[in-house]
Amino acid sequence: MAVSSRQKEGFTMPELEYLAQCETVTIVPLHRMERLELVRGTVGPFRPPQKTQVPLWLAAMLKRTNRCRIVAPDWLRYEHLQKLCKQEEEPDSLFTKLPFHYLEIAHILLTVAEDDISESQGIRRLLQDLRESRQSKTLRGIEMLNPLQLQMDNLSAAEINEIRPLFRHSFNMLRQLDSLVLASEKSQQQSQYADQSYAGLEDSFVSSYPL
Amino acid sequence: MSKRNYYDIDDILASQERVPCFLRTDLDGLGSAGGGGSSKVHRNSRWSLPFWMADRLNDEDYLDMQVSPVFSKQSNRMYAASPESVDLRNICQNYYQFGLQLSEVAPEVPHVLHNMYMTRIQKIARVAQQGNNVETLDFVQSLDKMEEDILRVCQHAQGAITAWHQNKAYALQKASVIHN
Image (cartoon, rainbow over all chains, first blue to last red; front, side):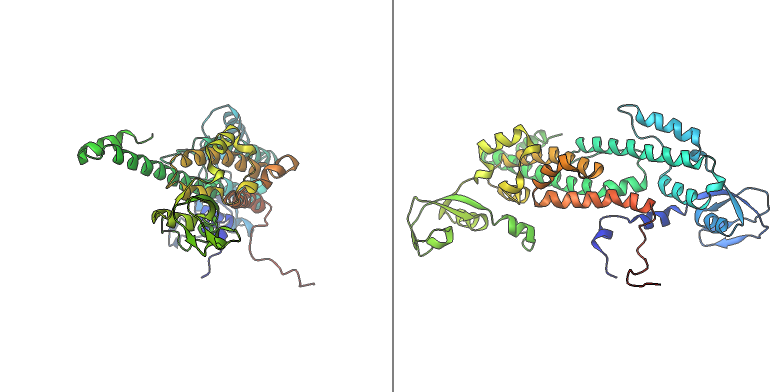
């Protein structure tokens, strides 16, 4: 199968959306149904109006055919998102804790189950604000790049996908530059201490490693 | 010279950049290689050769290769003052690649490259995120080949999420030639 160069750089958004649909959501089924035994697990018997946990793809399918009502997840409420927005906008804060696929789940739920989510317009606006402040934080993360390690907690799948090409290129470049610097330092030391023993050379090599 | 990128077209283009050389022997019949017209090149004359040629001849001691003016001490100091406003496209289109290759003979080049890269990368990322406008046009036109690649890739990645939000991300679309 021919893989386009766009696909080699990372996931495409439809792929991420597909992956996000494995997450579970709570629904209120409208019809009675027996147990469904699927590959990933059993989806329990539907006894309305009891709430059940189902995978997101199944919930979306049922909702489109009007067989259930979706309960908004805890983090997709207006007040919670407002709190997270304020937290995000504080200067020098880390990323706020959001589910790994929050963008995709929110998109699917807002498309399919708009009537089940209160204040959907406000939530859309808040999600946009959240995304913008997180983006400016990733910009600051670029300043802190070094060839050894960079840690950014709580980034979501779509955001990682966004920054992957740039960071990959930067890491490669920095690593190349770093190894060149080390190689030139090592050859310099070898010419200076030509008659030192090998153990001595190793010590001086370790101490000159830039951290 | 590292052989790992022998077939890489970017490496080949980058090593085409000229470096000044100081000849140690008389070379007969090769004057046209340096861009001059005469067929005999004398000892102790200055000559400008592409890097791939100069590096090999340097190893064989036919000439002394010197650092290209792009990476001379004066240029390095000038660029270090304000990396973001340096017009890399005019100076040397394959600046980074060429620098990586030169690093094997000039040990101060990696630091110069590092400095240049870190500052310009941030600006590229910012341009990609906030979109192209009139003020950034100058900067975008001054990027070298590798940075242009990065900018294009970044812009595509940024646009991917917004396009998907507007439901334009799916590959299957009705062909435009079909009129119903």
